Length: 298
Image 1 (cartoon, rainbow, N blue to C red):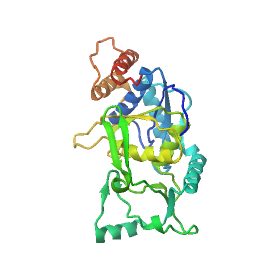
Image 2 (image 1 turned 30 degrees about the horizontal axis):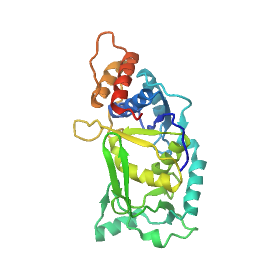
Image 3 (image 1 turned 60 degrees about the horizontal axis):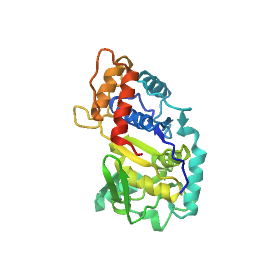
Image 4 (image 1 turned 45 degrees about the vertical axis):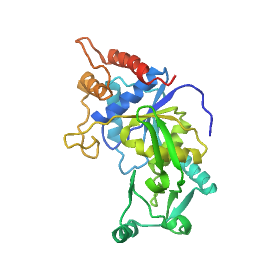
């Protein structure tokens, strides 16, 4: 693994498919407070590897929303779309180590298999049947790259949820790291960037907890630093589903920053008592102290 100093480095990494909403504010606030509570740095990374889903206007709105809510990041914004060469280098390292293989399975083939044999749904979706693991696709054919996970159990400590344990082979399967049409998968870009940015603590939504053992295994396969993890509670809509841009969650109103922050802090279990003189800066300072008492990593 690569070495790291003890300086805290956090990050917030939204996908720019739309503006921030109440759920994404919880993730932003929690990661911001964790960094400030540890006198560390907090970076902003735009996870825009999938250009088909990325919107330039959404990036501008996200920057405006963070500013309006007092969530000031350190340094320059990092764009994943500008880092493709780094991901390709990581793929080459994994290929040399024998940890990835070419896969030319189409959606139609996988759908036919599921219709005939049943589909096994794992922790993060359908588990790949492994057709190309032993007989990889020829190099000259159009293909994706899949990561071959191990058969052992992977356990990761989470500061809120406790131990996250998975047998990746039976509960996740071999994920695609680069699609046949080119885009790099979230798993690879996330792991590579967290290492290069020096991230020491990943603070994000609980919906990503099931990805964490996979991300740890991928980081270890690349010889990268493995950060600590803290997964935050989610915000659900009236239908019981997690708020998301995909289900058209209402964007944050910048004119209601104090109210929005109080709502997010309530989800995080923080003291939301407010007076007429409460300000965004004052609330963030108070919550940073409360956060330090609850989630300090020393």
